[in-house]
Image (tube, rainbow, N blue to C red; front, side, top):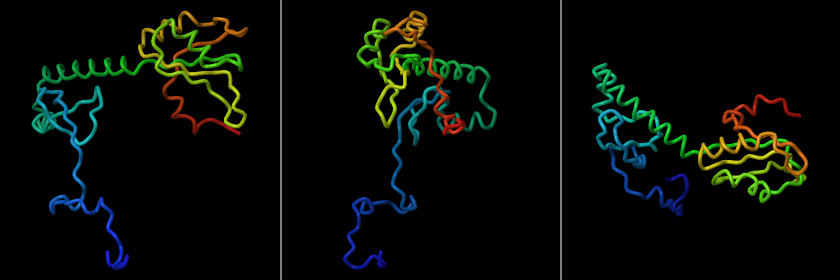
Length: 183
């Protein structure tokens, strides 16, 4: 660029050879997957989301024009539902644990929850300024069944002199933070 002067060194990213047909944009990374309608291998320019329909060009036009049969669409729906359930199984379950003793440690909580299954993550909420516990925690189990078992067995259990409350964490709570009245 002449405005930057003669001695300006071009960054490496701009030196990459690009063809004239792509309007000087870098080439997209393609991700291999299977069409959910006809099960043919295809590539898409985004990471496929489990449970969302991904179709090859032929199937996309077939559905758009209304030529896809009800049988094909119902088979696709079954495939998508299986993929969704598998993804939710792999995601695990996040539990909200309330009314904790303010002095409790992560190791103590791990000892309480680990008999029910493999723990993926454990986090005790603490005050940013003081570093002291806020009295609640989040425990994420690898398996949904293990998490449900922990909920039923630990509900209203006494831990360090306090009755703890264990329930499934609401996933939408982090999105609604802007609606809270904080001071």
